[in-house]
Image (cartoon, rainbow, N blue to C red):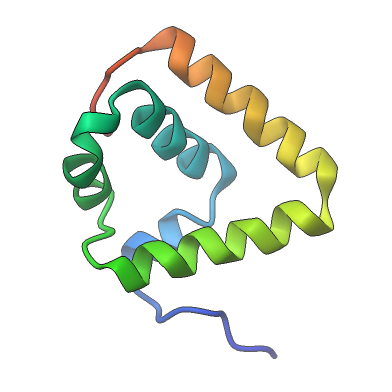
Length: 88
């Protein structure tokens, strides 16, 4: 079995879920001034964690354009439902 491109921190594993990653992206888009607080609330406390999660999703989206389309749709819905909302 291949190793995941990050350690097994709970925050990074939770963000393997498309809905959670899209919620994070929507929160960042609607409240960019609060990016540090939002990322920390999602458990991404280091630049390395953030980079690993982003890199994994980038690979997933490149391999599956339909997944990217679904992500974009979820982000737009998240922005419309709760602009500026904090993390769940």
